Length: 145
Image (cartoon, rainbow, N blue to C red; front, side, top):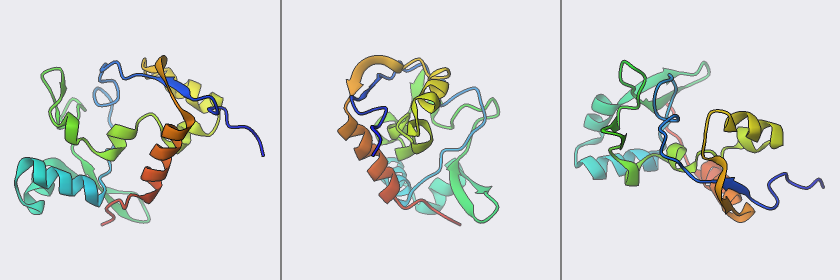
């Protein structure tokens, strides 16, 4: 079995630059847990959360629920220099950059690091924590419509 390129961990520390939540179009797909957290945080109904903060994205085989963006492509929750719901942000946001596509190999990690100044800087995130993020993401049930 080949050694994982992140066997000794990876350096990552969020710089709060907001590049991952602003400027470019994208999707923040929600899980059932994410939706439940937003309902609890805003103290409104599921339908109200979906109507106010979400959109349906057609992925071909299925549709998924995603947060909406502002006209300038900022996340709906980005305001005044940061995330309004930081402590309650979706798993996709909390687990970045520890996503499978970026952990396939060192080249994939380095390519993503070109758009994220926190990657390859700061404290070392141990292999065990990285694999915990992967496991949580794999076990989470995302909303399919």
